[in-house]
Image (tube, rainbow, N blue to C red; front, side, top):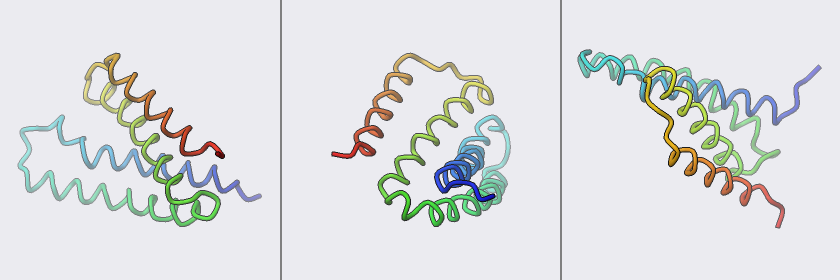
Length: 115
């Protein structure tokens, strides 16, 4: 049984964004680490982001267009980042972040709506 293209695409993008978020922001919890070491570790983590991101876009393209793929990626990225910042960095999720995210979801609706 083969999974539907949207499920595979979104699943790969979700996993990719988890790696991306740790590569880009995980080091903020370890500010005492030397910058060159942090950069190398982040590159290593980002490798796995690309291992998932590239196939996600390749598989999804055709079912989704490029603008839709980018929109899906951005919504997933912000969702993952919200959870990451609250649970890993212990930062508060403020009301204006939620409103801003809601506006991005509205933008996604505009992009996906058949006009």
